Image (tube, rainbow, N blue to C red):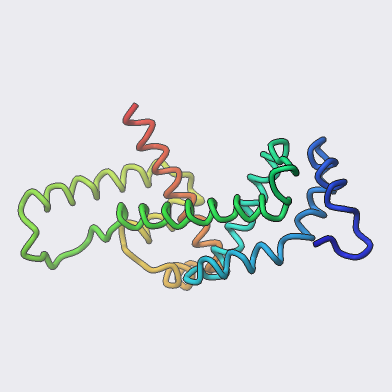
Length: 188
């Protein structure tokens, strides 16, 4: 997989293990295309934003875990693909959990399954969600409220705020992560 004129993968790995960021950047340059292709082939329903996000997260994990890489067990590319696969699965599961937790709480038309207890729970959830949103840094607060309370779609938020769509997605993801952290700290 090494490009002509570049250093051998073993040398780059050795240098990355001792903390050489330039070597790790060269590993990135050498493997990013195959990693993107791998993720796209395995997770066909992901858009480019998520593919790039998973690639970045995967390389971050690989950089943090580079000392655990054992060339006698697998090639670097295989090790990296394994990290990417696990990262992709985690990301998709996290998004699915987020969508289940952040359902539109403004829903006016109740189904037959709704009962007064469901309405009370929904109202309490809205109050809690708004409390958590108020605890967010200003950078995330408005966008989180637009998504989690007003129920706007990412594209609508981007259009209304003039912020690029990928930035909106990133801020919402980070806001949700911070809200989850606040919830977990509260439950301790």
